[in-house]
Image (cartoon, rainbow, N blue to C red):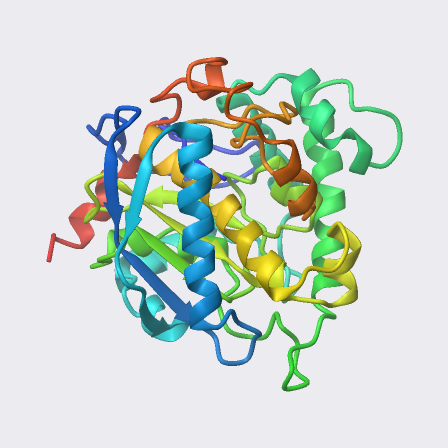
Length: 353
């Protein structure tokens, strides 16, 4: 999943101040050429409260990603050894001035003080900015929305808001092994902060984590994230220290968790080996954003860049076929379709290390 920022300042209808502001620019980085060989720097950020892949299974994840990249994009990807760290240490990389600036982008579902109308307007602005076609969006999302099909993007945004918040509330009742909620008082579940890591001294192109990332934001909400309750599997975000001007973060929680909520959205139980293989295959989806700057061809099931429906990774994997959906075959599959963008004002707050 890639959530590009709006290049223009967006003032959401009914808001007293803009939520996403600043000097937004596209990074001057071209997508790589098909057939290139690349080597990506990898870290694993662990939350000890949550289930995790073993080191051996993390290696399976990377091997599966490597194979899927070759089959679907004709590109050979190498990986460094995995550097293991903690989620807390990873969050310490976020510069405090930027972290303070990002708070206003978060819909606070934990305290119940979020602005629901503002959230729907933000989703509508994102869909409009990305030139989302209602027909394509409904092909993907309609089976998971209540009532009759929305007639326009604003109606779709309102429906997505309703579904997202209802399911997000359900996620609050999922418990970790220590008996406390998976979504505790810590900020580690907030997509906004993971999206900001690259403004700090991040030295990795891929960050895998067992942290459950489920949240709501006033901008950048993806359709596939909204329908499963604000759950993020992976995102490709700006990074000042990457040769691709981006980095990938991906949560393994949806692959390893066996709570009722997850199993309801997933296509059956996975063995640890299968979970690792599917996680790696889906990691290739994010690497497609990272290296080729590809978009999302919603509903095109042969495309590895088509987001997974709910958490049905096995179903998604059996349908992708690089020969039927090569790079350049659709507008969303054009290299450079979604270039990385960054906030110049935030970079000024934190000079390069």
